Image (cartoon, rainbow, N blue to C red; front, side, top):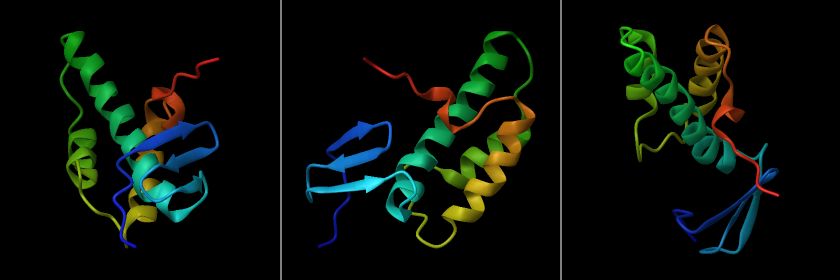
Length: 105
């Protein structure tokens, strides 16, 4: 079954897809190439958004990384490389993939 995992319930240790009925742990390839890349995109976007709001120039390196990750792009073969590059970039700005996460409860 080919599932896009559109109906997700997110948990601190992964996500459950209501479409296919499968729970994907944080260390699973499916989680890493979808949810984790999405979180990274949001975190990097927020770094530049804060700079824009402060009247500072946007960081070209971040803009390039956002284009590489993209929105709705499939990264079946290169997701680990993208994650590694993004983690280096995020560390320069003292953020990580959890920086966009708000825990409830």
